[in-house]
Amino acid sequence: MSATVSVSTQPCASEVRLVTGYRELAEVVLGLLPADVQFGDIRVVRRTHEQVLVELDGPGEVNYDDSLGLGLRVLIGGQWGFAATHRLDPQGLDAVVGQAVGQARAAGGGRVVLGEPVTTRDTWSSPMVVDPFTVPLSTKLDLLSATVKEASTAGPLVQQIEASVDFYRDEKVFANTEGAMIEQTLTESGGGLMVNAGDGNDVQRRSFPQGVPRQIRGQRGDFATAGFEHVLSLGLPENAARVASEAVALLSAPQCPDEITTLVAGSNQLAMVLHECAGHPMEADRALGTEASLAGGTYATPERRGNFRWGTPIVSAYADATIPGALGSFKYDDEGTPAQRTQLVKDGIFTGYMSSREYAGALGGQSTGQARADGWQRLPLVRMTNICLEPGESSLDEMIAGTKRGILVDTNRGFSIDDQRMNFRFQTEIGWEIRDGKVGRMLKNCTYQSDTPTFWGSLDALGGPDEWRVHGVPSCNKGEPLQVAHVGHGTVPGRFQNVQVGR
Image 1: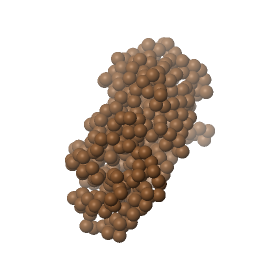
Image 2: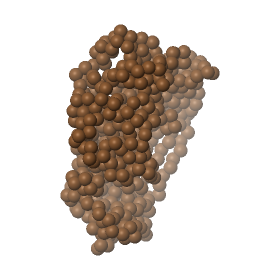
Image 3: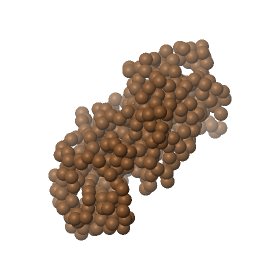
Image 4: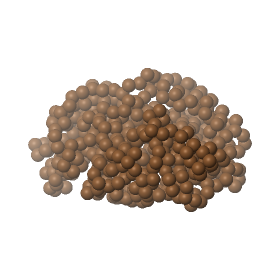
């Protein structure tokens, strides 16, 4: 298997290539801040990303990116100023301070409240068994080539196969004028498979272990804050033939019926529904109106906290950045606030927000540790971490057995949702009839539509702890300019009554 390699590297000063140098750099920049700066923080970030991709009838492709830079935030007169640079020489540092300070001064008076000071000093690295950046490229290409070979056995109707793995490492130093100095290293690994089948009249897709938007090439599958061991645990070659055969079978499968019926959604599918119905709506910046330019507002407004019926009493949801190995986990966010668990929905009632220091202050509370930035060149935003459902007392088998008529769906293919995160429509890659408590025919083009409180208010069963698992999603978009966050979703299968499908 041959490979083409492309490398994109940001310029960086040799004297700060080591992590210890990043710490010294942060201290130097904070020492350059003028006296009228009320608060300042700096993030020095080196991000490394390796992607390996193998396609049907194509060579292996390897992309490697390594960037280093810093982002500086200052508060003057209650207003933020922000600037970022990859120039780490004295002239570059003077320039980034001047830009951030000038921006804050020009903004005029504001009312930013940060709450309790952050003074933590710590060093932390995410755990892993096998460092993915030390695994030979040949091993990665062999794994993906074997996956593509197995998928191609599904026959001539298979038109496209993509198998890929991605690895990320962020080496970060955070420091502020309150005395904090935090060094963190996060390593993330993931991989997956996508197969397209076509017969001249129709095209169907199957993805494994989970669906990813079609426009994202590579970055497919399931991700974790872990090493190469996570990729091996996915079983890509072992599942490839089945996944491709399902894509072919979908070509001749009947259409999803147009009816109101019982919907049983797999854990994988509920991850995306939870993402859109609870994750984004319960980010505090959206609730306070600062996210409207890109993706609208939210139904979860401050006056509804504690009294809005989000779902049935059996459903509770939370954000938790402390789950070992989950993609949205870390020890400190990009403001130095410790990772923590935050209740969002309790017994069906909307109860809380994910927040940063600024937005928690605006709501009269303390940060829940969800300020995150996509690299050194972006301002920290309120971002979801691991959004999870608390498991119930049922199981997928029991839900199916207790359903007279319905459909079973899994693997998200696409969705549409309004700017208040209320009315939605989801499409899945695959579905099956349920008749008299048994799974029947495969169905294609399965869709369902509802609104958030109606849908979650129709939930009558959730899978138990044995079926709870975290899905790692590397493609959560937010912000302008766009920032991509890596998040997780801990979910179980669920059953919903009287859902419109197939329209």
